[in-house]
Amino acid sequence: MTSEELLTFLAAVGHAQRLRAIAGLADGRMYVSELARQLGMSRPLLYMHLERLEKAGLVVGNLELSDDGKALKYFELAPFEVRLNVQTILDVLREDEERAREADGPTDEEG
Image 1 (cartoon, one colour):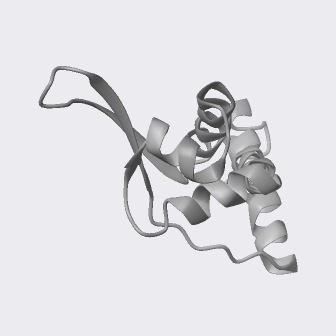
Image 2 (tube, one colour; image 1 turned 180 degrees about the vertical axis):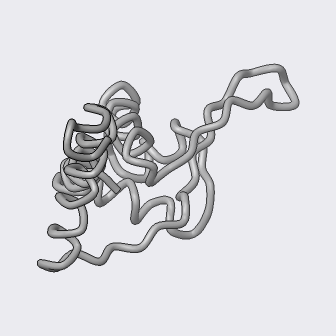
């Protein structure tokens, strides 16, 4: 995990409405209109929150056709586990440093 991925994750879960969306999907997948009704939220606002959660890898969305031909966007939780401590942060920053060194290529001393 990079620091950018960690920050994306923290930003995604750092909002009460997104936590409510995660809780709403805890029992299984739902289509957006159904979840919006359950949460008492407009579909456009819910879509915005779900996009943030999807970008962070917390939910997965799939477009499906209903029996009557309507397009329904279903969302479900992706498996995830949160473990944040000092070591997690140190590991993320170390990974960033290693990626930066690899992107810069070998130095005169290395190669």
